[in-house]
Length: 285
Ligand SMILES: C[S@@+](CC[C@H](N)C(=O)[O-])C[C@H]1O[C@@H](n2cnc3c(N)ncnc32)[C@H](O)[C@@H]1O
Image 1 (cartoon, helix red, strand yellow):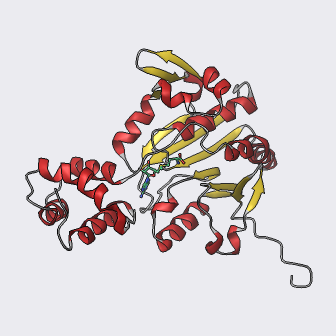
Image 2 (cartoon, rainbow, N blue to C red):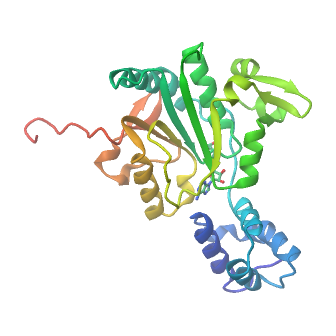
Image 3 (tube, rainbow, N blue to C red):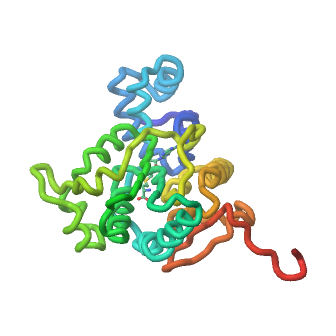
């Protein structure tokens, strides 16, 4: 189905309303292929008809399908490497110390917001395992959320194609924490049991989720307009404990989010500790 005059704007509006994703002008092809197929199946003659159908008569299943089609789910185990090094050698050790000071030792709460098909929260689980060795006596919860329901169902199954697993730059950890299964490679139970998957649209209130020691909010802010990006970053920061860390994607930064988001570099990863205010230079305190 081809976009006619004015319909690209209508489809961009639909994407924005459902997900916050700001599709730019160059995404006409993506809309024609991904949304066009759904529109044709529904018997719509054009995108204009499709828009009004989705806005005024849509059933939740159809909206889920549209959200799945609009969003990009590209991910990989240990994506970009550095954030997971920072997690293991800086963030988690400091969080564990802070928890001890709070009198809540052996408890960890981590959130992978926009987890896609699950490789990110499972990678976090593997790092936790590596660091703590035995999880005996530990209360570890990794909350993994995404807006796209079919994507979350894939995540929850925890079974990945061998070629997908082979793309990871951590082959030893892949060997250790995934086992062969008829459908591919399955994440071992001791990691799976750390992760809970929930559907959550970052545009909406986060409800009772939190507070967290660490939030991974990676490779999702890039899809939003500036105002939405800042609003989400600030609300996510609000779910962090005072010692908590925020990790965003390599192509994302929060330089325009104010002094609360002073970037720090650890293990070549940029991370933020938004509740800890940067110390003012001497003479200006
Ligand atoms: C490119 S993936 C990033 C996956 C993982 N965080 C990583 O860095 O590899 C982006 C994910 O953001 C999700 N997403 C897009 N808009 C969202 C929204 N409004 N709320 C929650 N998740 C959203 C998509 O469904 C997709 O799975």
